[in-house]
Image (tube, rainbow, N blue to C red; front, side, top):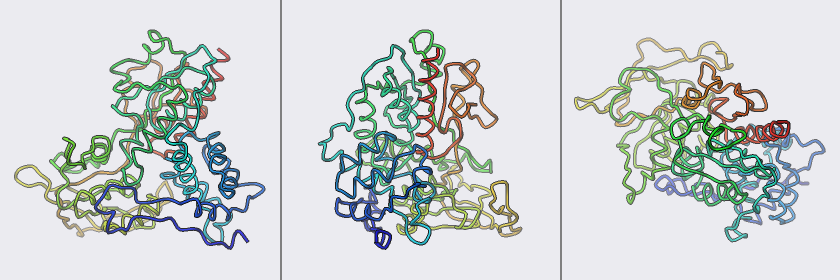
Length: 464
């Protein structure tokens, strides 16, 4: 019986080895392993995994192809709904989406949908000798659409619009395309070769143009895109890159970073490499404040730079919002977890550099608005943790630049653009999706929003 086959484990780098390099942790399945894992799928009549996928990938169909050894066929199934399979297979929170809904998970281990998706993307690209999985789309429409931001929302929106026949140009503020995939997620979790030479090139192969080093709101405005550049619609997928801080004393000391800056300098500017002139000072002891995936990424990056690293989190491990896999990997590699602990002050030396983080012990009280029990300080329990670097990984919000330079474009009190369920903003012809609308969320949700907006843009332009 398929459901009696145990889940096929995924090969990984040894923790003691990978803690000192930036190579990918998970090594993925080979064909034999993938076919065996795919054979576990029950092919439910009403597949809950598909319903739980934000982009509605036909999961049982592609898994059936894998079980037959038909990698190209599996890739074709996925490509109908996802333009970033190699990324999603690596960083999507499958445990709360497709795999979390797998019927096999009720009494055992769900099918490793994410690992199979990754296998299909990597293997199909390898066997295609690096060629794009899709050919150039045919331009059948006279209208041009501008996409602002080359992260998952922008790439997904641009890919769908190109397939619909529109001329599409992506405008990216940084010098490389990929958005958070390029600057936010470490190399050991998402290799940049997968992002640029794989997923981004596939979108380019559809005929999408990508212009980098263009800051919309400074280099050019949304109004100019319409009036001077001749675009008929605009999609804003600029993400949420504005970091949050705690507002405690000492946050302006040298050695205090936002996780955004720390990860961007290491990922996009290769600060971890000796042959790049963009070093970053981690020191011997690093404290990372936060408990999400970004906190895990920052802590594991600092560890690889040679630091003794601690996660500081105000709740217990049960409430950690990070993926279980990331927490497990961080622990294996040697990251220290300080639970029920909250910073109250960053302490500095006479030269203005961080020397320690003053914290207070916490206990869990009544549930808050999110349903989690609220952390409450324990009076008189303050203590110090020696540190040379403190990294704040407390979430992000959208940059207000575009909202502030575009008339008729509303944002809410959190800085998120106001848009309906289809992505239409308060400015006619301007659509938005992903973290720019929702605040920081997941790659797959941003992709789903980009695809939804593409359909809405198509309808808008045809009706217009």
